Every structure is written in structure tokens, then in C-alpha cells.
Length: 246
Image (cartoon, rainbow, N blue to C red; front, top):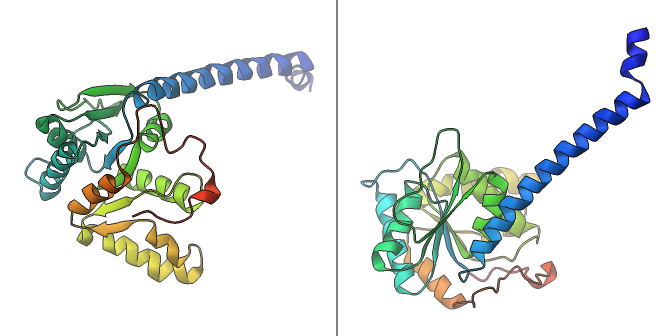
């Protein structure tokens, strides 16, 4: 009983709270540092096209080849290509842009199993935190492209999809490349989620499934080339962005 009173004493509790508050403050400072570093580089180029997809797909894979061609076409039309900076689909899109002579951005992440930046980057920034990196991958884009991938790609797709669905970010063109890969997921949404009313039927119109990378270039060209240091998120009002511009 005596020991419990010591542990529960106001002084011990205050000290513990102070330690927790200090740790939270240090953690918040680290988060802010990651975000500010990202904003500094994002503001140096106009919003471009962010490409997501598996880090595991090799140079011989058809989606790698398609992503590389997409990077080239985007660069040819003056659009910055942004990826997570790693291998696979990220490397392919960066490579296409880099080889054409365009701007090729890599927003990399520090991992326990080190993810080395691919060699096709004109600009690179490494993040400590996934959430800060995802914020920058979203903020830097006027068009979003998702190639086939794993859990990471699905996480990024779902997060951007829900932000657009709920009006927390502008509804911008969002493409899923690979009909055979993405259609089963879309059918799941249509057959399971829509009847259960966990999503609305029109929510499936936020994204477009296609095999034609020319559609992505056309969407980027339609938006045009925003000025450096301007961003579609600046002054964003959810009520003004309820319909897709694809």
C-alpha cells in the first residue's frame, strides 16, 4: 500500500507528465523539420505529375517500360515528374524524364532496409517520416498516377482517394494504370461497398482506370503549367472542388 502511494504521488505524476511533454515536443519538432524541409524543395518547382507504384518491378516488366515512357512524354511536354525516389516504377518514371532532359524529383524515405535513391534524379530529398513524405508527394502534384504495386502503393492510393472524397484536397486527375490489375478492386468497390453504402457510386469516378498513358499527358496539358511557388492547395476551399477535372 505504501509503495502505491509513492507511485501515485502528485510530484511523481508531474515529473512523468513533464517527461512525456518533453518527448512529445521533441517529436513534434522532428515532424516539423521533415515537413519544412519538404516544403522548401516542393516550392522550387511547379506542381507536376506524381507517379506511384511498386519498387519491386524490374526493367523487363511491362509496367516499368510503360512508366519510363510516361516519364519521357511528361518531360517532353514540360511537366515535372515526381516519385518516391526508389527503384522499380519510381525509377522508371524518373528515368524517362531524366533521359529526356526534364526535371525528375525523388522524395525518398529512410528505412531500416535502406532504400537507395535511383540514379535518375535531378533533385532529391530524404524524409524520416512516411506521413511527411506522403504530404509532399501529394502537394507537389497536379495529376496522380498509380501503377501496380503492393501495400505501400495501396496505402498512398487510399489516402489520396479519401482526401478527395471528403473534400480535404482538390479533386485532381487520378489515374490507375493497368486495367487487369485495378479492375478487380473497382469491382469490389462496386459489388460490396456501394450496396452496403459505405461509399457512394460516384466516388468511383474520382479515379480513372486506363492502359493509355497518353490520357495522363493530356490531363496534365489541360491543367497547364502553374507558376513556381504557387500551389492548388493555397487558399483551397473544399466547396469549390466537388467535381473531377479529368
